[in-house]
Image (cartoon, rainbow, N blue to C red; front, side):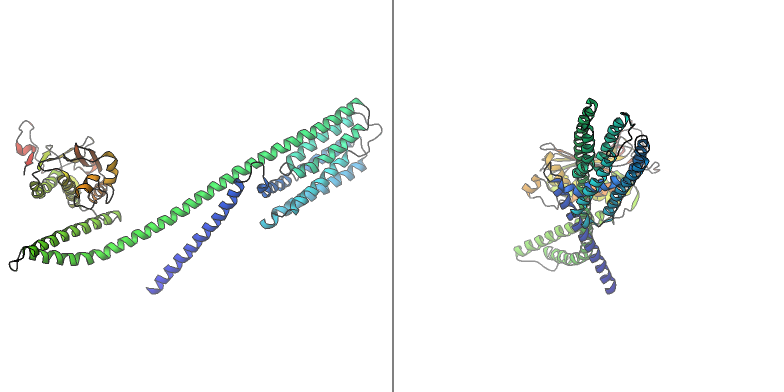
Length: 518
């Protein structure tokens, strides 16, 4: 037993340590995300790592597209440029492009702490500068003397395509965007301005305008990337919040289960310990107040014995109600079901309440619909339900009042018990409080009526175990009506001992209408 307890303790300790570690990790993640979301609107430095990742990922994905474009440009340029120059330029393009792809792969494989270092951005910028200069070298290749103006148009079209491609690849890092596109634009613009033809001036102006347009487009793509990253950070923040809430919920549930287990153990242990001395107190105080062993000449002593006996009974009832409710909540209350007449149980409970109703001159009226079949239920549980409701009705009904008890069929084929009094009623805003465990209305508190506030909770729990319904209707000054009903599934389809009578032969026994006036 000792080793088992120690193993359980070690398991709980390890589980608690794991949960604490997860909470610390989530707290760090939440702090990072909130710092990102709390950055100024136009300051996106907190997303540098993410933008560098997008840059490297785009370069890696374009590993085969750039050589293909360079190959197409080289193949067409053979019409105007010597193949030797074209081959040398193509080799330089492949080398610079391969250098960028290798750098991007190295960045992706680097540890997280190294990715945050600034030298990676410098490497990307230098690599894009070499890459842009290699494309700019294409526009400096000497052309054949017989080259026509079509070569100029091809230069301009190539410039637009390459600048557009580099804008898409380097938009997330503005410095790299300028390093990869500006050398080409400057070289092409300079080569066009060396000629005095209007067409060259026009193309030079268009090249500068295209550079400005693609730079603006790159800024817009950068804003879109930052917006996407902000949304992603917001989503991560929400996920972390949900994980935190889930962890707190699991922790609260674990604590609630542990508390419930401790409560059940406490009640199971203390029930015997409390009832044993209470039975002795009740027994001896009853002997003393009834003067079984002889007359008690001091009346105060006899009064004290009666008070002790009454207090002991109240305490025993309180313990029994708490144990009943705890047993029901723990799912340990078993129903011992059998066929029974609902009206018989109600009539028996009314007989038991005669003494209390007579003391307050309260009239009990019992009305029954004729021909009701038996129901399948736990007799002890139904008796406790009716007794609790009748006890509350008699307790809060004023002297000389009335309590009406009615048993009848429901609209869906079940059966119900209605208990209505003409007491002070319950305000609408206090009904939820009254229905809770240990809840009492303002009238009960003002009049200091004895009770624990567990009666209605036990009634609801027992009716729910029978798959029934519970409803309470009350208005101040108009009394209170409580209705409990059993479903159709619990009504016996065949009851041979039910005596069916002709409604035309209305006799007191047929309708079993009873009036117990005190």
